[in-house]
Length: 151
Image (cartoon, rainbow, N blue to C red; front, side, top):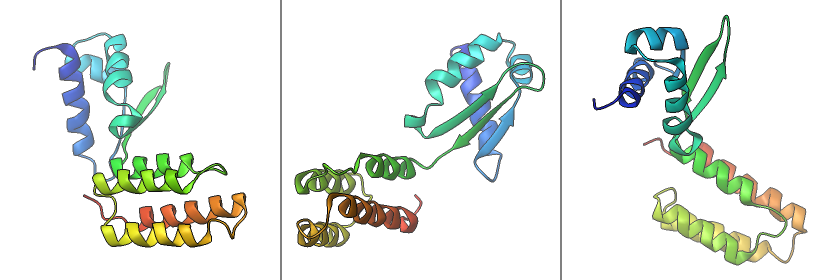
């Protein structure tokens, strides 16, 4: 390991890997004692290497009884959640096509699923109100996320 940040990251990843539920609760003082570093260095690593876009959720409380809870979230779950959040009343057929292309490129959909989603949305686009289209699309994406195979 080349620097303190790498050592802290490695330690946290090891602790996380040892847990069955992809969730670990640590104390800054314990990490600082093992790595022989300042708590601010731990904060730096948490803020730069354990971010949501890298598949982590970090909850941190300081002070007496403080802790750090780190949860690993499957990356595909984050992608689905992000796409679902982007669906709104202004979502067009072109927007959906771009979402489907993105999901295909990242192996979150098979061609057959993509074709079905696109065709279904195409057929109902003009028949549903804006809010009903949003509900329909979100429901489709939530169902896909629920049935997605873990890598």
